[in-house]
Image 1: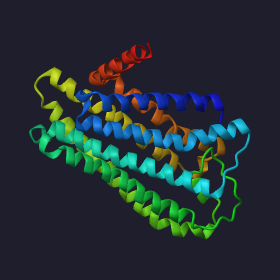
Image 2: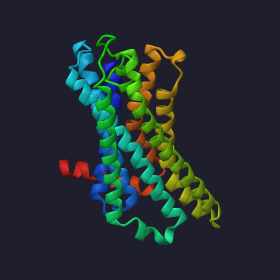
Image 3: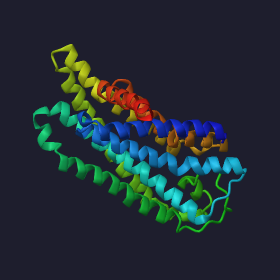
Image 4: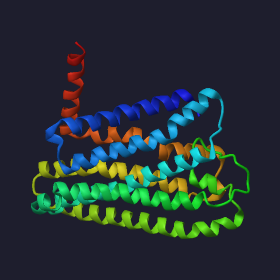
Length: 288
């Protein structure tokens, strides 16, 4: 991959997510469940893109594609960890939006500080456990088809292509668990938004409906981007698979979302925009 392209995307992700983390941490007006989960989302985005892109840029500079077996296993583990934890967190964020709009009178009770910390911790822990299960199973399979991965990072599907043909049977159990978890979270998000939009349409004032939609649309856009790119990457038929297409798809689902998510969340969010403006205005003052 082109070094300058990856560098630009990586710097955009660092800047965008770094600003959101700093703004949420420093502005007490943003110390709410929604922004607490957004801070966690930015941390996961930074983790996922930092797992793949820096190594790819270094390889591009040194004109090499070499990576040790242990480094490949670590990269695959971290990537699966951050991506699965992010999906779990997006599910938690859908529940937060559901409670805020469908059950507003119970919001403070259901989304207290302790509950939010527990839900965020559960998202991180579920990602860790799934990564241990998935990568542990993948790297216990013997490789019979060489040691060259046709990708810019150690992606589990590409590693499985190098395994012995009968080894896919060992992956079936993990695949079934993965499908159940992904489908369960997806159904939960869909049901939550059906109830959310039902409640929003009942709001009498146009201003109230607009505010409710503004709260939900960024999260819905991020979920759509995350799910659509992942589904296309992992569910596309083998007949349309090629090295160049796999590379483009991998960039779409692993590199683009972490860089785009901060932009999606800040576009229609006045509170976040104001916090970011205050943060940016403080920089020149401190330099002087």
